[in-house]
Length: 519
Image (tube, rainbow, N blue to C red):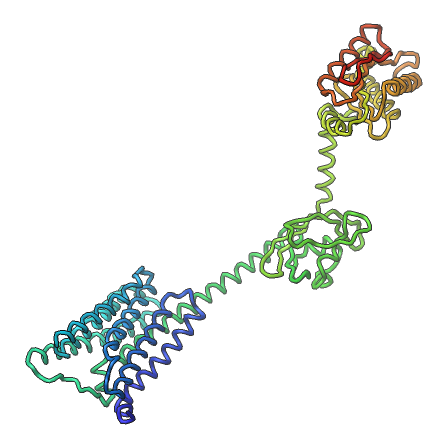
């Protein structure tokens, strides 16, 4: 056994070269999995090592029970290498090709053994398959990498694979010649020199090709890494530029603390960037609820809080959280104080009459529907200023506006908190008195009449009559609002017909109240 290993020391040297290629290819595949080739080439090296390991093992054991595996594994190894080249060139060659070539070789070897075919013919078929695989790889590679940084390495691979194919073509020719002329097999069973090993197996050429292919993969992997690094630097530069030009405070938060921010953050909170770096984000805010400790819900996408500005008034802030990875967040902080004030102002304008400041008709209906759920007695009153047109005709529309404002102020001065007051249109007003019976409503209207009698309006003589007509209806048990409005409007119309400056009561029957109220 030792004698055989010594005689095959060149083969052992080749196996050591394959081992180094396998380790290098496996390492590149592990760290650069985006490259499709290294995994195949590393697999090729390991399959070759297995095949030649079986060969050496069989030399040391007379039965040679595993010798039939050598050719199929060798052909599968070289098919794996060529498939790696194809995948590296972005061709979709199926993986089944590897197993197909191995099965073809194993099937032919089995037939040859069954029919006692000369070993030289078996070896000839194996050599032709190997040469075909190598030439297929040469054809694929010759069409790529024409003039670039790896063209020299490409040419190196083409020469090595061509030499590898040439060796096996010559081997097949010699095998066929031996079979046709009944000559003994030309190649000895135990090659004992590197030149002989090279001419018999072409292994050094294959190793050279594998090393060069691994080098190309490494080159592209390094180039891809450099490209990704350039893209990352460009993205970071764009990100920092966007952070600086943003009107919002932009910051990177890691484990709840500020790691990176733009200049807007310091301006917003009245502090320098150095003071804010490493500060817990929660320390920049306080809760909108008094006497409650502020805590950030990192699971929320955004929240609103009071920002604490050093040396200035606090402000309302909208904070948007974007989770990045792990405990890192990209945070945007906007001062929405003016926006909030504008929204409140717009909401006020949308719900209130611009002249009197009372609710408008739409807002009154919305609030009324909410209060109806309380199921308490409500007194609905509709008012109309008597002969309002005379104010406009006699004193002008500006004085008419003053009359409307004075009337609205008189109503508000007599109403309670929670009562709803609205300008219903023109000189008509409507009130909803909460938790109020009919007599309470009449008392309210009496106080209002006294207040108007004592009111003084610039531009209107004190003796000029300033009165109103009113309709009143009770809402006790969830009567429809439209029905109540019709009845109170009818009562107001009746008050006008009956001489004005008076109150008329409307009556809406329900299941529990069948008594008509007395005025």
